[in-house]
Image 1 (cartoon, rainbow, N blue to C red):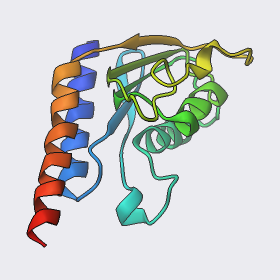
Image 2 (image 1 turned 60 degrees about the vertical axis):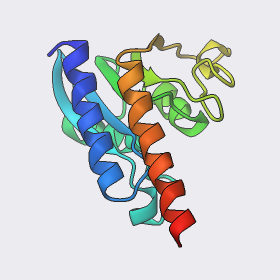
Image 3 (image 1 turned 90 degrees about the horizontal axis):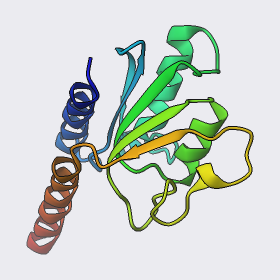
Image 4 (image 1 turned 90 degrees about the vertical axis):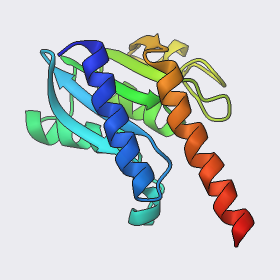
Length: 153
């Protein structure tokens, strides 16, 4: 699969999250250009701050590969990872991160801070902006709809 195909799948997962009332973030983990795990935001339904798309995908990847080191994988995410997810990417030794939309409020791969540039033992390669407009549009529409629903209440 190409980078674009992987990000389009992550966008589908983000749309699923939105349809479930979750902030629309989707993630896909690949090895040898094949999807081995997926995740989507489920914080509301899971009532758990740890239920981020990236963590779901990383967890699935660890199970699929039988270990915690994902050194042969690429993670695709529709939104720039937060500090928790950036830390998980470092800890899982994921060598490459591709994300769509930047996150000016919590992005920890260049927007607010770049955790990958700090003196940790692992420094993933970051590629940002893949399908950026589409990824951002899903988020903008979700929050616009949410504000509209709240105004009606």
